[in-house]
Image (cartoon, each protein chain N blue to C red):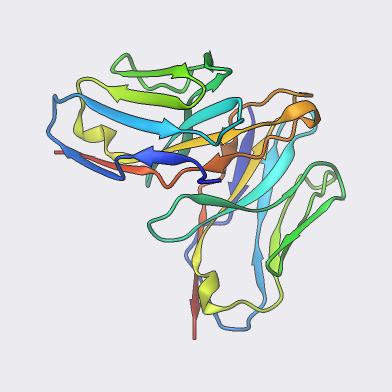
Length: 116
Length: 115
């Protein structure tokens, strides 16, 4: 299996621009998570989906952030408009807890976003 | 709410030294516990896990035991190598009997092993 795939790996943009991050989860996984990593706040859960449906978006910082999962193999995280404080590494992860409920998540390589 | 506290780094050791990275947690119910490792420029990789009290997770010479009485999950390795240099994250995931929730992570401990 190719693992969780994220694109782009690096993104540099200017304040006010729209940014779209992409994720392809591991095939067969029914949960998908978006995390943000910063030096100040560490790793934070932004939102997660189950069977393409958003379950908990309480970690999304504000209305500038939105996430979608149109099908089981693709998700996007969009920031519009972007601000310098959005600069961070954004990780996508997927899991398939099954009946055992084991919440073992598999992470992608991350997208390093820099907003100038 | 759930939380994870782990020792701040960086932790600097010499090769072949004994390693302990402390991790304690606060959670309701019976969470699963994990250690993830992040090498420079890469995503997080699962290092080991434990799903119930007294379980011992182990992988690549690393071990951690789920201690419910002390709400701890300390990471240990008997003899570290330069290649173990990375950032280590302790995390918990609530057990939800078939479902899943996002993981709660500690701040991470940067480990530096010197030859």
